[in-house]
Length: 192
Image (cartoon, rainbow, N blue to C red; front, side):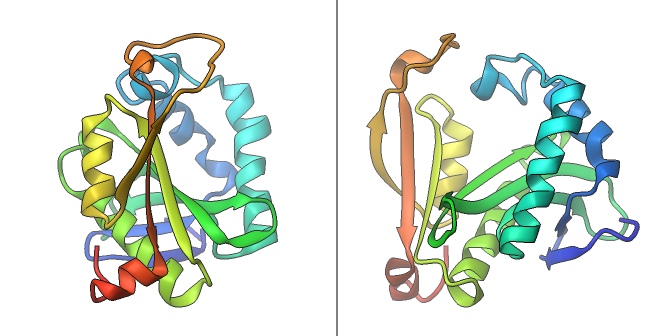
């Protein structure tokens, strides 16, 4: 982990701030066509964009919000980079509603890491970050991501259609929104 600032630790994961040293790991993550399947149809992110736009955007969020943004995720005990979690305001300057997102290496799929990290972020949001509502979005056909949202305590809200410059397989079925409010979360005993 080096000297990157740790944000959150779960049973198996460490979520930490990104640094400029993470560019290669992000390029590798986004270079897997299966990881990018429901995002870009499999097209990788360009290194120049990751280094010049994405990482600076992540670092700017830390300066503005401190505890809301994008978090690199690693296995505890010296494990390698697994991917990232997003937990950031949906509206600039407003902490009440945040978007939950995640992108993990294929080797980390099916191990419960996405649910573990998502649940920890939802808990943190409702118990210490002033969040009132958590939302998440994915393609309607992305069953694995939808399961993570449900296991993390979010419920289906709606299906909607976006106009994208290039359609990707499955986009004709639309996008789905899932959400949970602090009130709903606490009513369930503060659990996902």
